[in-house]
Length: 228
Image (cartoon, rainbow, N blue to C red; front, side, top):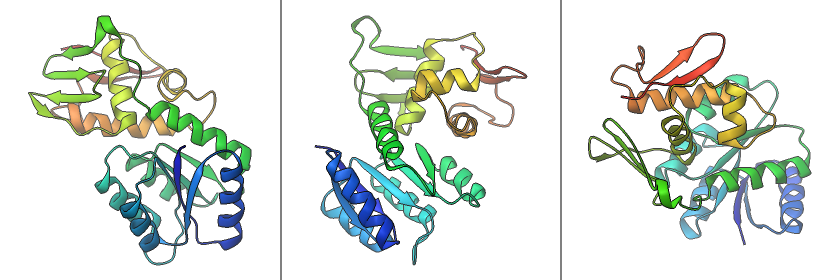
């Protein structure tokens, strides 16, 4: 059974959401603030965190940083208000996997949780292509590890999937919507999610992220991976 950590300070929203997700087959630990979230995760790590950005005490973005320090590839779905676009972008920059906007459909929330968990799960290894190599980059698809110049490259689960897609499909321009469909598994969503993850990936694989030579922008189209 999948264990979810729900961090929501509104008691009614917290109890209603937790009850629905339990009925949907998930194990749910529901807490009201950042201290409770860190204590709950330390005692029993979750498979995914559902995180409200507007929390008393520790802000949601800071809590996301703390949780990611405990597990770099921890799947995180943020809950935001419609007026929190700036915070949402910051959360995506921290590597959050998805977000939902209040008020939200509980059924849609469950579907998004399942989608993120599917994308975060290690894929079945491809016997003929267990590794992808491009210049100083080496990705082990079965172990889901990445090396750059022989040193471990810290990637979130989504960053790993995105880099694997680009290296495995070089020299072709991909629209953001195509990347969302092929890497995220989303039929709809905010395309800025792709933009943020591309920027984060450039910071980790480009000699000069401000002037990328591997993960380049194709204006009017999207992004292209130019192999070394």
